[in-house]
Image (cartoon, rainbow over all chains, first blue to last red; front, side, top):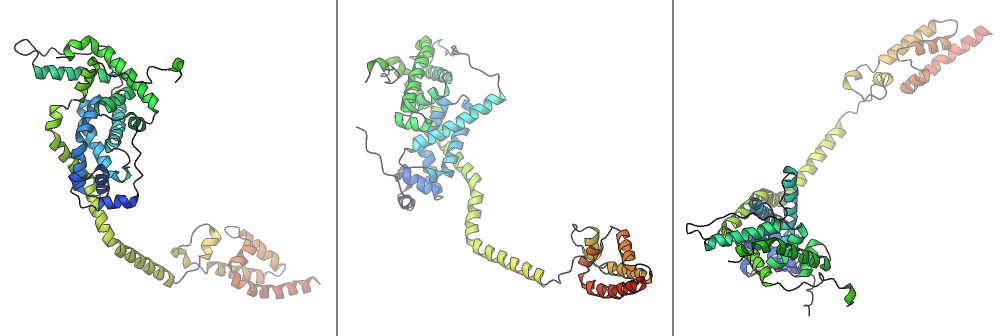
Length: 214
Length: 181
């Protein structure tokens, strides 16, 4: 049984949130957003601190250019702070932030493609580096790094909606209806992207199963 | 549900052990991200202060200064309006309008306001001395003037002179009639 939807938050309630004397760490995301919108920099810092890990993790999963991840994450939060008044507390803050991050990632990908039109990704070959330690065996840390790198490479070979749907659902734990809203598509289409994305990941990663599983 | 239309993509199958493996890798927080949390938060706050700090301060100042700024602007507008109204409104230059009616008035040609009147005086003198047909002489003289002025246009511009000219023409016309008779 699905929980009953929360009633819309009126401006009066938002104003009450903003004037609340609660310490920022005790505020929920709606209260935090209202305080940020009123220019409370401590609330803005709490918002960044609270959500930076999922936003940066999400961008790591969906963005080709790993060097741009923190810049995109920073821009995501700057926009969220600037437009905090538009946040609808009926929905989770994480979904809102990931939607902003996704748009920035798409824009960044398009700009990068224009700059380097010839750059492409090999269809099925995941590149692995032989990073054996002095003992000739992969150290645990190196093994984990390699496994993560393989997953990142495989993710980069999915279509953008498949990649984002998988990151939002399996990495960030967002429910399907929120993903559908964030991606502006029906739930059935989200399921389809998840299904095909999983199939594609299996095709790409199964030949590397030994490296993936320590 | 209609079994024949069932799409396997409609219902997501549970993750198998292999899928769970790579999804765990995906969801695992990277140590470098964890280590740089504070630095990231501070960099966002610095960028936010740089992006919005100055306008925010200006905004706060603006709110307190705004009523005074509006009052000063209104006073200035009132003073400018008053000084414009107090200026002696100069008539458009007749000479300028005759030569180029679309050209705006200019102080440099105001001193030539009486020039057409002087020219008109000369024309009248020539007409007066003409014994045969003064009206025709005037029309010809005006049409030959620079800018090919018409008599009507001249009367229109020099409206104040019109009664005098009519008074002037009346005896001339009567003299002509008498001479023809």
